[in-house]
Length: 386
Ligand SMILES: Nc1ncnc2c1ncn2[C@@H]1O[C@H](COP(=O)(O)OP(=O)(O)OP(=O)(O)O)[C@@H](O)[C@H]1O
Ligand SMILES: [Mg+2]
Image 1 (tube, protein in one colour):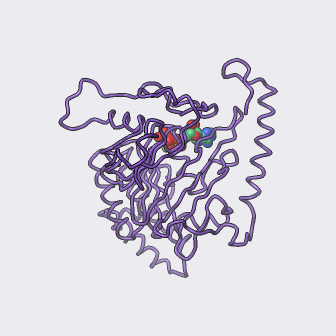
Image 2: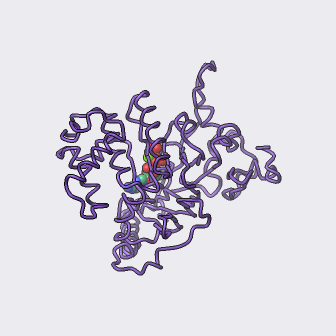
Image 3: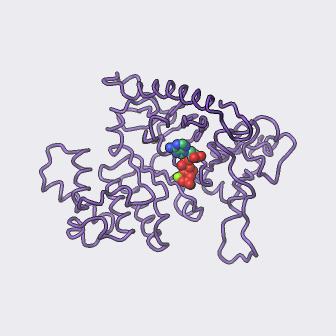
């Protein structure tokens, strides 16, 4: 870790030392990624529970930057059961996107790397550990088994190609199987209709700038669903859209998920969206999961002070308040995390023991888990959910 001279400054010598060390570390990771013809047993594994599509186990994803190592995801574990929707919430910068990019192996390389942990993905006939899979294998995994919908549709669409050509390309790349051009076009039109684009033949020939934001997002969803993925990761899919279109897009996602029985990992700031969509909720804070449980557990019995704060900062229809609650303070610097509970400095419910080491995770019910000293004694019978 970087030795500091004064507050927040690095000497040129320190900086050089860090860069050199970073190059050494990332070179070793890159070598692993670039391996060819890796025997399958090196990156396949078994699910711990066959009813899950994805199991993330103690995932650590770091960025090796010139100012030090950013521990963006620092020991995250959760499951995505088949056919269910998992909502991931947390403030800006808490590691939601880095978690989802890790699942796709799309971290900004070489500085961004999955350092340790397992990401087990059940693809039907085998289970792939994405943390160990070389790039060659990932190219097949992405799009075929996992696909991702990003916040801003314009970043996923190429402005100089027609919509039809772009969707065709996805189909061609992933399940060409000697399909003729006409067959692929027919399938593209079918997909566009499936996501609720009325004038599908017309849209097929249009460029992205000729569509509205909502239509573009539908096209992106059509591309993501083109190969019936097992897992759909939606990172803030509706943040750029107005509320009516947002409701339509969410409805659409839900219907499509049921049709192909896949799972959704939904990332958003919007607790309302989570309440409507998610079966399970994961609450992240500063690269760690502070609380997780079923949507009912998290919304009706939030226990971690951070979750309680998030819930209190959500407006409720019919409830009159002078001022919405906001959690005081800000997220700690990820390069220099404290060695006690990361939330302690902002917490209004601290105990004396909170100055001790980071609290380990305890279970209040088989699904409801959290890391907070306040519940260490209540941990016996799941009294809180009772
Ligand atoms: N390419 C990168 N290089 C260095 N640090 C990065 C990089 N990408 C992300 N980070 C850091 O990782 C941390 C987590 O970022 P992430 O994008 O996952 O946040 P998020 O929870 O998705 O936030 P938001 O809600 O704003 O999208 C942040 O501290 C961020 O600065
Ligand atoms: Mg993000």
